[in-house]
Amino acid sequence: MKIQPDAAQFPLAFKTVVLAGFKAAKPEVLLNAALMLALLAVPLWAWFADEPFLITLTTRAVIFAIAGVGLNFALGFGGLVSLGHAAFFGLGGYVMGVLAYHAQTYTALLDWPFVIEGSRSMLVIWLVAILLSALLALGIGALSLRTSGVYFIMITLAFAQMLYYFAISWPAYGGEDGLSIYVRNSFPGLNTMAPIQFFAICFVLLILVLLLVKFLARSAFGLALGAARQNEERVQAVGQMPYRLYLIAFMISGSITGLAGALFADLNRFVSPTMFSWQTSGEIMVFVILGGVGRVFGPVAGAALFILLEHSLGGLSDYWHVYLGAILLGVVLFARGGLYGMLTGREAAHD
Amino acid sequence: MTEPVLDIRNVSKSFGALVASEGINLDVRPGEIHALIGPNGAGKSTLIKQIAGGLQPDSGSVVFDGQDVTALTTAARARLGMGRTFQISSLAMDYSVLQNVVLGALGRRGTVFRFFRPVMRDRELLAQARAALVEVGLEEMQNMRTSELSHGQRRQLEVAVALTLAPKIFLMDEPMAGLGMEGSRRLMGFLDTLRQRAPILLVEHDMDAVFQLADRISVLVYGSIIATGTVEEIRANPQVRAAYLGEEEARS
Ligand SMILES: Nc1ncnc2c1ncn2[C@@H]1O[C@H](COP(=O)(O)OP(=O)(O)OP(=O)(O)O)[C@@H](O)[C@H]1O
Ligand SMILES: [Mg+2]
Image (tube, rainbow over all chains, first blue to last red; front, side):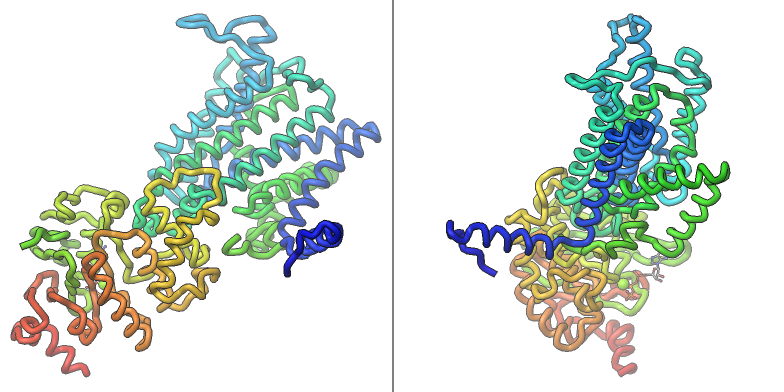
């Protein structure tokens, strides 16, 4: 099909292009769009209808989605089955908690050898959460990536548990009870206490993180990482070290989940050791598996579905996790690609 | 005499009581096809692994391009210029054919740590990748998922990936297996010209192919090299006839 850039024909040509584009759009792209629109429509509607709880619920889904996108980068693209991503989620949470706590009590975080003050600025908190999570991922990854399979799962789990017990036994920041922050941290030009505005912040961050992963997946690094997941020997034979690819992927993955942790703590204005717990790690993995491992938008679908189930089943029974478990088993046994696999089929080999 | 590209010095390797390589000396010189033949289980693939990395010899050393590489990783050896094809195809099966060759071209470029530019739109990489596919005759298949290729096509793809690396030596472990008559003939023609670009250490079962192609042949039996020489020398060698060719003839 040829389209003439003729001025008179422009509207027609434009229409042809749009129509062709729509027809060519893969089901995956349509599902992505529908999902993001729904995530946007619900809180907007709730805002007009004055249902702040619904906004908060959607914000939760968005934050979980970010955490899942983080894990999915390691798990889906690098094949690294980490059952310890709560380590990053919790670290992000505590970065927020500790920085805000010192700001709210007007105490310095560190007096010697140099002074470190707390902070109430989300931008500062995010930055610190991202950097420290990357650093933690470097440490955990450097040790655990020498193993694989079940050992890797166990070691990542063990690191998260270590941090969990550390948080519990550290009285300075609330120990088992956690830390409450009275006012949500600030973002220039916005009133973060307004649920819809905080939602907007999280939603934009989700979009940025999705774009990041999309770019990474298509980059040279993404190609090599995916190849390492499929066949390490092949990657070595073309002169690359899978270990290095994994380590960087793990750092990127950890920092995204760490950012989600900081947002989650800010949403609740509360952080506790629960964020480090193995249940949290498990839930993040559930988002990824429900949505579709290795699909860029998979965790968004997974987190949304999780919140939906939690909200509907949770109302029916206190044991809703049992039902969730059954659904998860169903997905793993019968729909291995998760929601995305079911609705859009197998990913194209080439895009 | 010109310096050999690859020089294997006194390499030994045992798996428990099984001696897979016993004091092996072998060199590959510029411009030649050096064939490595021997019965099943003789230790051919084991030797290739020790050359390419992935298996550490118990003793002896592997010198490549004037450098002792015995202690280097597989990846480091590949970067120095070893282009290897596997006896059992080792590819990224979920990727398209083109993605596999682009991965090779990326390996040649050296750095994969580029995070934002779409790699499948990189003209330079695509050009190298497609050129390699054309050379092995897989250009029609470039958008197919690798897992959908036949065995023979996978072998061709392995060769194509090795080509993208523009290596200083090719290490090929039975590249013709599963190719069929026509495919084998084609690949033989190609290997015949390929030796101008870089020498080839060729493990091959097909005697006719070996006798047609090889400049020199080494015969490996039970982990030891019993003879190295030109096609005529190997054909005439009574030890080889007894140990290997005799078997072949008796079988056919
Ligand atoms: N990792 C290993 N551990 C134990 N034994 C091994 C290992 N690798 C190879 N062997 C044994 O070493 C011997 C040589 O194997 P190798 O694969 O090198 O033979 P080959 O000459 O390539 O045979 P073929 O022609 O069948 O490919 C075989 O007896 C094999 O079983
Ligand atoms: Mg073999």
